[in-house]
Amino acid sequence: MRRQQIQTYLFVFGIVLTVSACFTEPNYSNTPAIDFKGLFKYQIAAGGGVGQAKRDSIVITIGFKDGDGNLGVDNPTEATIASYSANGGWGNYEIKTFRLINNKYVESNLLNNSTLFFPELTKGKPKGAIEGTLDFNQTFTYGKVNYFSPTKFQIRIRDRDLNASNVIETDTITLPYLTPN
Image 1 (spheres, rainbow, N blue to C red):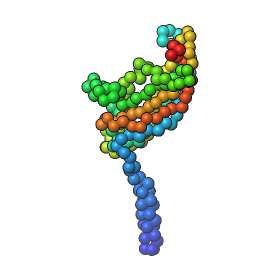
Image 2: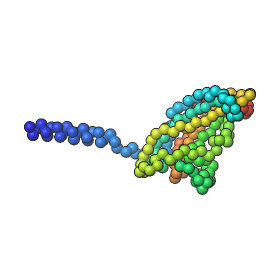
Image 3: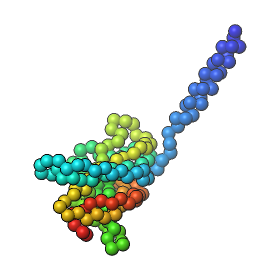
Image 4: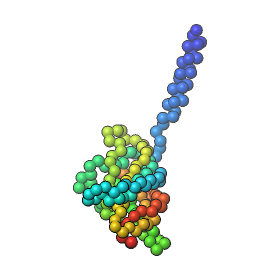
């Protein structure tokens, strides 16, 4: 009888030890690292009224890893925006748009991409390594005359200590523009 109990306890201890070994915290750098996960495009039909033109919406998905988990800013204040802007002219999410013009990719400055922020990812949680995905949505409106250009994006993020990640590039996708250049 005792031998059977000891074997049961050893079996349970072995299972607990095996399962606990699966939950070791990853050892990531405190500088964020990102990778390209996907680019999804869908069309939104035109509706009635002002601003309801037909448009293409894209969603860019990136993966991230960060060793200290200090990614994101909730409700950035003017001081926060000024601090980020003074250190490179961008928020905590930078996206650059490149259009193919005359067989060469040229940066296209879109006003709504100037200072972007994503929310804090570990609010109320202890400091530590995190990983996951971020989605960014952008809309390209059709006009009376449209110029379709192959487009790709370069993306990087940075944490609250202003450590910038690596730069990644998306796949190419054709999108509508209101001007030829």
